[in-house]
Length: 184
Image (cartoon, rainbow, N blue to C red; front, side, top):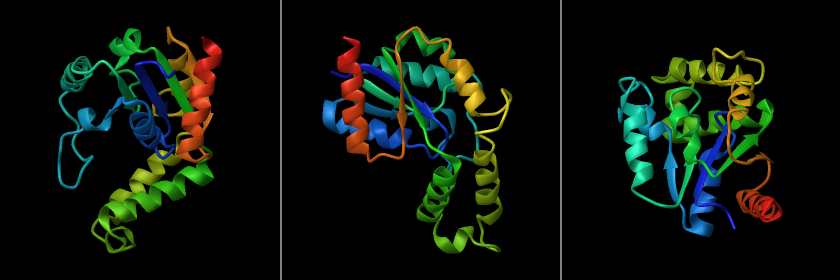
């Protein structure tokens, strides 16, 4: 059985939100995404960060409102006070040559193809986002990177399961169920 309080993290485009949705569907957890708390609800989204103390306070209240949750996204630094609440952390790994096309497709889906092509209204923002996401594999501790996540995972007081995010979500949920069954 998958524990009640699960945090899923990894690079942008690795499938953390998709896996959280799969856990919610299969096991009845509430799907929660860190981006909904870190960023203000702007149009277009993800352009304005909330004031520094606000994300943690809002997220803490949301997590307290339900006993079973699958929390997707990165919390490194700002969400560290939540570490004792985790019963399981899932770290999804996906190579850059898979992640970046996923992210590009997501930008097209979110904003429309015309907006993200050269000369489009969101072209520079989309390219900046993709350049930032490309830093993940080789970036240092000063950016959202694998090095930062690996360092952060050392602080976990609960089990950490690593999954290959190339698999379909149903397979990932099954692998997670199997890993949890072995840990019992």
